Amino acid sequence: MKTFLYKALTLSLVSFIFASCDQEIEAEVKPMTASATKNFGTVPGTTIINFSETTGFVNEVKVKKDSYTTLPVKIKATRMTNDRSMSENAALLYDTSKPDKKNAGYTAVNQGPFRLGNVLTVGAPRGNSATINDKGGSIELDFASFGTVVMRGLYIVDIDENERGSTLELLDASGQVIYKQELPVTGAYAYQPLVLGPGVAGVAKLRVNFKTTNGKGGSGAIDVIQFCPGSVCR
Image 1 (cartoon, rainbow, N blue to C red):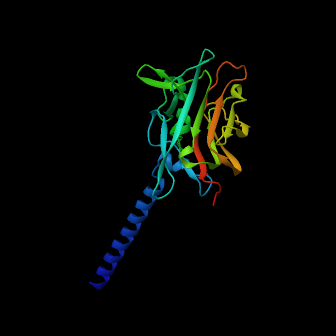
Image 2: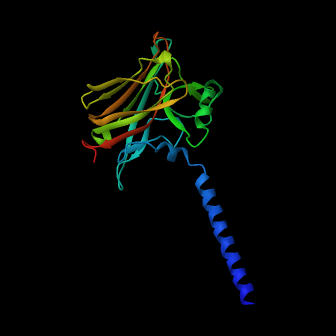
Image 3: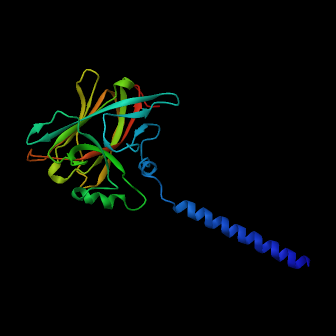
């Protein structure tokens, strides 16, 4: 009887261990959210804007400064059409996991463990929805609510070879450009992290300009903005 009881308990314990292992394996392979995967590889200790909260046309996003404070970052995008800039704000949070037919190339980016999710781009109305404008334009983020920040990096998205010459500009509180860099060519619908070394201090605004080499269009997007509030990164 003791032998039988011992074997029964042993079998139950082994079954419990294997069941526990199975549960752990299931947890490990469970897909992560786009917001969580996009934070991998970011600069440690920075505040991150990954645009995961909403989609559609926007004027601002709310950013958590610390445990007690959430501040707005204003967003404005200028859309070009027939070499003319449109007056309305064209800042669009575009969900790359559900692209329209025109931008179906984003589907491949959202397969596997990494999912790009929402990106900030220049949008254009399309019936009851919106699509990505490919006629050129710019995006500007205003960090005035933070005073100034130290800009550490961001993701550059969908800059094709013919869009070489598109630029990143960082401006101070007086509106002067204090840093300028050509955007890397990522390839169609692909992305590339752009790390700004130890960071650029005194930044009040971030601006990206999308254009083509022949000056007749251009598109692209940005994501995962990484910065430190104030004048230093701790």
